[in-house]
Length: 417
Image (cartoon, rainbow, N blue to C red; front, top):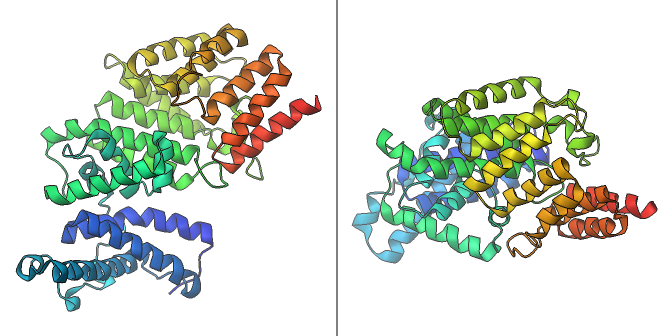
């Protein structure tokens, strides 16, 4: 065992290793649902053992070994319960055949991309593909996934359980799909990566504004998909969107983790290399034909990143792009962002009128973002008292502590006058 890790560093390490452990188990034994349970138990064992004893020199091998032994126990228990020794025995290695850590995949052998496409198999519904991948590959909790879908946690728990059972019943092999099958899974794969990145960039729980492990993992996986499909414009568009958005990360939080809105950010802290790469990717993608939603969002992000200040931002062009995006994906979040663009391009009253159309939409009516946008537009319009109330309403609904503190601070600022 080597040195002990701080709690945050340990959690980051376990999150990064979780899909690798699951991939190794599924490749070796099958039984996706049981492998996922065994992986979770190994992670719990590591979280309780390593703080006392230090993390091992080969953490991945340690986790795979522990998970393999737990999986063996689970399968044997199932064997005894079902009384089908001959059938189950074909899948259960004897205890003395569980390989030591050194015999497992070497560090860097990554089954995550295979796992990603496996979870997006057409045997699953699109919603189940996304939920299962977020759980197995992204490492999000069921509550975090439920928030991403704007659904109750219990509903999401049932969805993930059914998805794991479908994987088990289908006998889906653990390998990359044939070239002809990649396309039919790609939409779900990109949506999954988009949601993982968003959860990393604006965490829906906890005290931190963002979670670098998730956003970095989403970018890494998207690069892998882009390497697999270098000429697909929406893959390039999504990678560009991630890079252009993540480029602002260093300026989004103050020294104590406090949220800094884009209007107040020090743009010299933005990552110029990521911006240049993102702009190049989306420019090339847009030249290939009719743009898809990820390319449009990347084009919007590029306009923000290339503007030297908030005042110099080309809001009419951003509004025009949101008009196009609304035609492609008319969901409440896009409508909310469209209202912001209307307010910035045509004035706050126009933005508020656009926003009012959303207040009857139950999907987003109680979302903190709607109240925060309304507060901002009301403040721009000079209605300070109502803006202060909306900032409080947004703070009460915000899931992240950094967001709550920022919104309460905005309300307090207006109250002081």
